[in-house]
Image (cartoon, rainbow, N blue to C red; front, top):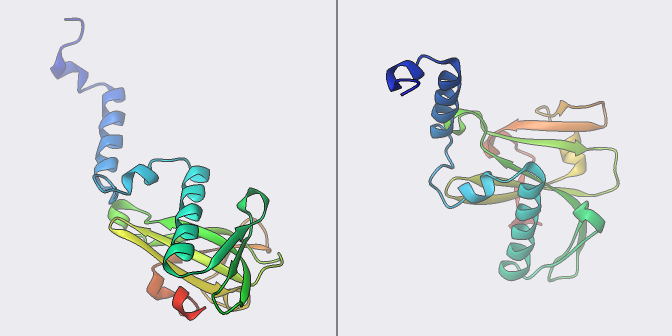
Length: 169
């Protein structure tokens, strides 16, 4: 044997691998059905969550959904004919065991849309909320990101009084 098992555990590479493995064990999505989505790249996660939102709105809520090119904006038509133009932002839990809440990022406040749909992905399911762009702009939790026209929020759904359930659309 070139390297004995007792010696390999003293290697820096082994220590790095062990830290990564331990961090993965703290991931609240490990061994859940949503681990499949969690493991995707950021753009792929976003795409899947937008499709899930569309299916939910169409099938469960009877709303018509259309997208612009590249799924930048969503157009929602309620059963009563009322229409909304918005953006969709998704987040998984952050931090060890999800202790740091959610983080919705890259919310551009200088673009022409009326609502933001927040997709909160938990280990046991998904919750949807929305806010008007105007209500979002005045919230104290909003943090500037990449210049004054782009924002983020970080916390739990209960932290943001401006968020409403989709039933309130």
